[in-house]
Image (cartoon, rainbow, N blue to C red; front, side, top):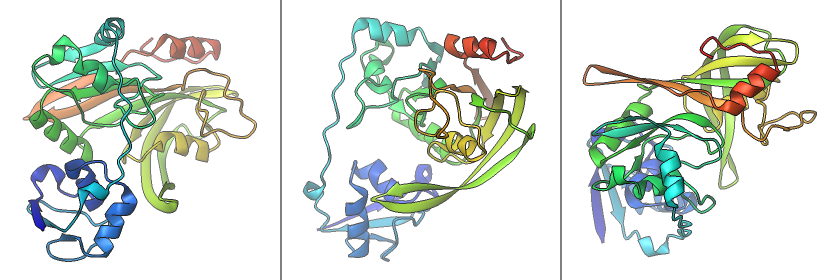
Length: 303
């Protein structure tokens, strides 16, 4: 049995393995690669690697690809209480016909999975705001990172916003309080970051522009604008220069005790354009972030 799919504009320049997961379900990476190798999945009638990027109007062919073979772990179901729904609705910065923007709290996942229970998608699915629609997550924000987050209200808006993020047309600004004094006050970080898929190392280029807003001998407040969007990019880059983020339990130096309960990384601002209209959203700093700034005698102009 043969199935044929055409790539639309939304997925232009996306890796084929990601296209498969976005369109066909949460299929394990190993199964995708196996079927690409044996020719059961082809791009424009040719065998390709999982890293191959698809283009608009490309044709993806599936030959005898049995979806029942896929081992998909059950998503943990989460049923939010009215109090949880209301507390997250109170964090909304903007609510329009196409999407909502909120100041996400630290400690809550964006969407559910096999490891996370409490998540924004399940919470807003029960909100009256989405009574006649469905919430769509359009970008990533780590569970422990606070700040600006966007949820689309319908599929068309989700595809448009996802495309803007993927094409790097959304400009993001983060703030972090990190250990030690960052010596250079501004510049670029360019790194080869390593992540693992099926125990295989994958090296990805990462670039961030940064500016130190305030510092002393024990800590620094830094503004960061990522050019690329790698997983844990900012946390890894700060660790690489010897200035890990306060509260980071994963990316820390051996002599750093992560005594802070919260990760001091905040998605402060997002800017983008839709049909020549500019959108700018800014998320106020959490109280625990402001408290540490005061304790460490660091100044941020907007406070």
